[in-house]
Image (cartoon, rainbow, N blue to C red; front, side):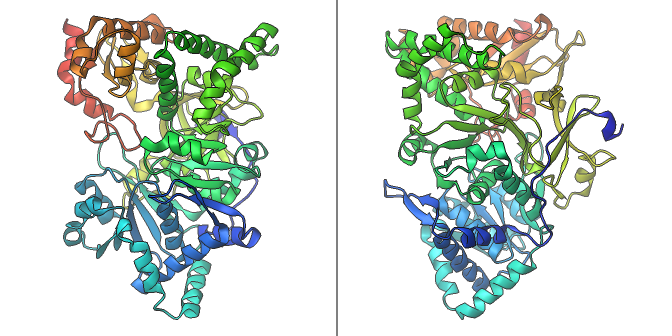
Length: 612
């Protein structure tokens, strides 16, 4: 089959990346254009206020650290591991390495020693920078086992200051000439980073992303007239709280600098609400689980009151109905408009204040958001533009726009991307944002592309007449029941996970007579939910056996089943007392369930669904 036979969505790129361009030049160009404009607001570990840093100040810091890397003996093309949560130093180190002609290799701070060893060894990192002494203790033994690794630096031990002081020992003019020479020698085709996909099975693969790949997405986003309204207006601010080892966060960190949006870093999600309220972002980019948590927290807080609970539920329905009406030719009726206006005063304004008061737009990626949440937030005044992308596509490959939002879809192609649907429903992608290949793995690279050069995403989808794509499931996760019915589990999992006390869901039923589900409980949300229902405190084990908890989840399953046919619906479920987390290795660092591991380790619990 040729690309002419496939349904294709394409949005023309506004900018083509020249071979002589690179990420270091991106920052240098911004400094020349607006040296005194605030680029980043930095919050110290002890401080409560956000301190502004201009483009000129940030570049001065980047160049000073780059001199340190040069003095350290780091050569062009060499690699340095970065193992740290999201923080200002992450962005600083990233750009300093590009200024030095090198590249940063991200490692999730939750990674085990063996995982870190594989990444450092496979990418041949010469140095690794970690956040704290605990992570130092994790990777220090690897200096002996990883042939290329020479030294571990610790951010909390002021390694940035140490490297800057080392750079000051050089002749500064000569060091700057060396840095400028390295920047000039770096091409768009050179590898900018290798991001190891956390993967739901098997050993992570290193995705080689070039300077062109990343520049393509970060430059063409603000250049798009509709996306520009969100990310590049004069008062735009975004708070980055996703882990910067994830491609989505890395993309955001560079995008903000290119777009002129003030960037803030929130290292600990436990402080996210407080950081949102003090930083006051106008837009954020997040994964669906963040929006689920925000909704569930607002729901739980309202339901703590016998008066506020019914009010929240009523106006949540109004918000959803209002948003749905916006997609009809007639629009909201006068009665619905009046109800929505009242909801703004009683509910929606409070929700927006919780998130800083200035947040009006968000972009969601990394998994399906679900129509219910999308309509609720838009109806409440915070429009979520759902998008889609992978590490292999430098993050975005489709996204909704302010001009024509279709809630429930992942939008049309991102500027400069081609998106197609293959005969078996698989989403295929082409464009300058598609990765160069898997590091040291030519076989995996070959298997990931069609004969005519399309990248095979592994995701299943459909496309409407306007080129808007909808995700329908994962190609490898399609369940085939004993009756031969093909079932995409994502639809059911996403809807059921929206219940306040549900943490994770894995739909099962391969070669079985009907569809079932494994459900885990949210330990953070459970106490408030029990209190709101007039139930006594319980442990997770007790809640899993409690008739009222089971009945509530049974109702949630019934609602989730409304989205599918009877043959696809969940007939029985089993509540697990073990949640799926990154720490116990049932979730990837990007919060995707490792389905194969769950199916293997909880085989007995699955069997109980079919033998009761």
